[in-house]
Length: 156
Image (cartoon, rainbow, N blue to C red; front, top):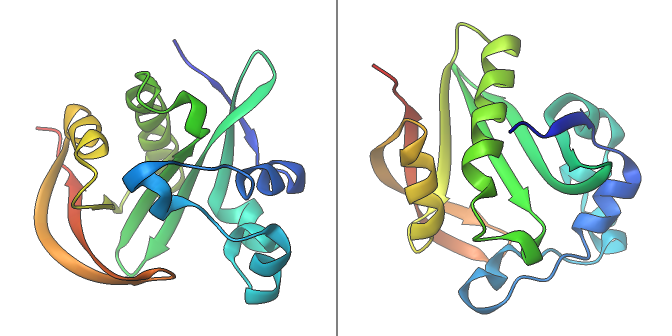
């Protein structure tokens, strides 16, 4: 099953800022759209939104987004899913589509991602599609420094 991909719109971005994750996943909650716009977050800037983000929809309903971002000689992937749909098995299908899109856009780049160490659910999903842990790194985030698995796509 493949989900339809399309350009991520301003309306989609505003919905993302309203998503509310619970428990340990609340670290993924974003500030209000208005504050994010003042701070210059990528989703609020049309140029970055159009270049790096894609929307996923099913039956014409937006429910997830992907990000494909160039960083030096690598392309980093990111994904966000409506919190009401997390843990239902959509991640693997979304990641496979995102990997496919990254290969089309940047065929000569290594495909990587970073995932918080506590997020074993996501780590398991990423490993199931071919990512391997390279190292654990500290990354500064809006909520403070945190430990992340730096992962690389390695399909033999």
